[in-house]
Image (tube, rainbow, N blue to C red; front, side):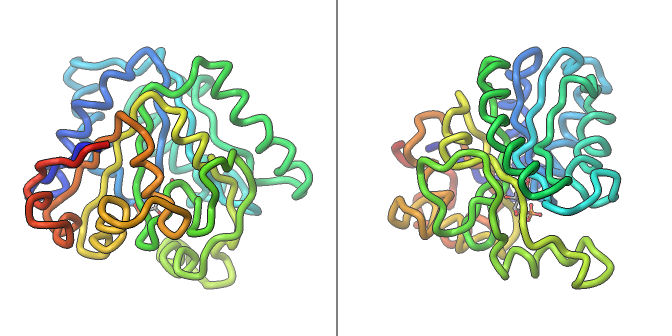
Length: 251
Ligand code: F6R
């Protein structure tokens, strides 16, 4: 695991963008939420100046809410279209988002097919991740197993509370999601996790320095050889002194 620490989220995102452009023409794993926004902005600037072209790149989103119309502005279908497909110039037919609408049986059946679709595309070259303040990656909440695959999950109360900022009323906030599993994520050839802000510092410390296990799903990233954490100094603030400067730890 390599740890890169920069003063600001924008600077950390520039480093992450250097790693993500390697996936152009291949397969990119896409996160949503606030954390990757500076990264998508950095990539969009590079697309605009012609230094990278994602037109032939395939994209697989990490997750989607269950029970939200894909046309809802806060569905991950909408967010991926708005933040990724448009600004980064992906071809819409090459971008896939787990299905969260339909009956629960339909959602479960389509989740089962998602890992096979990723494998059929050749596997993910670079997976972008954020991290929840409880250590989740994708929507693999604490308690998720290392061998979990894409599936429907219950969101943790803290995740529902955090996501409520995107919805007008509490009743509208989804309580379930379909998420790539831990094993799905770990099959990516390389992984770039972006985190910023003091609210992520505890989860970052647990991921990097705590025990590897289900209590902090992001800790499973230490089982992978090609993981880079791109952090701003606030997100890195609870790491051991040597790591706060971005010195890195062994895998
Ligand atoms: C989003 C995702 C989640 C978020 C996490 C952090 O696709 O999989 O794991 O990365 O909840 O969310 P933000 O970045 O909004 O703080």
